Image (tube, rainbow, N blue to C red; front, side, top):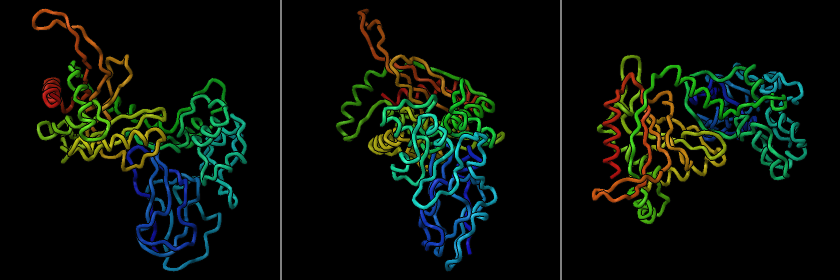
Length: 412
């Protein structure tokens, strides 16, 4: 018999939600088969069987389970399924039992054919008048807050206040943080208070961002340097490059490529800090901020060898960000961040340094600027303020200025 234990999926959470079993209790599995889906603060991950046999559920559906806890067991041949009393493993807490909101129906394992409805989804159903029959008709095994929002939107009902898709973790992604996930009382207050007057519950995505920001500001002494870039020539180049690689190419793609190219000359900008030592990265891995209305995500561009690869990756991530459809592997391993601020009126943005990294580059929207030409004639150019937030324990102002100067040269 072999145990399937929950791995540590990220540094941000101390527990994950079991949202779907992909193999029924007692059914045969082969080594490498995905058996269950767990949700973290922002992402969903499939866990696989390490060997072949018959799978037996240990953790219950819609329960919280800690890293290291037993999720399931694999035996050489089928054995009777565990009783309901033994379905919850050590470290797995029923999500319904954690909520102090007595108006929410319990989220136990449902009868055959009925979906699991998460507590936040039930709270929103109550607020919007959505019935169990309506959500059951969706045909989904697990009903999350985002599903209720989309159903209510299709019916013309307004979303509840603060209703980000993913408030129950259903729309995934990952902003990095080293602080623990909220405890039971915190979760009940954040996810079960949708109907409370005067409150604005934070989604799980936004709570992950909050933990990352809190950790960053509490542990990283950051400084900031900003330089004005003439980006007019870059914008002209993007048109030709888009035709050349047959992919959309914009400032984001060009900056990701240029930042990655600086890794050999500026290895400490891609490092992490371990006590009094810096640990340089073997290769550049660029985290890029995306917020398309479903929450802030920081997926990672691992393959920076060509502009086509970068454009492919960013296009895939933009599509994923519209639905929050990320996997944990998409959001893990960044060693520097590029933060995008595309609103036309944003002229300055100071990003926080993501825990585990030492730098974050901010790209603001291009702005027209009136200048005097060499002949004294008045002309215009297109500029953007490009800033670098950096961990002052490792990087000083002179280093930051040299990095930005090298970045300007790389882009020309």
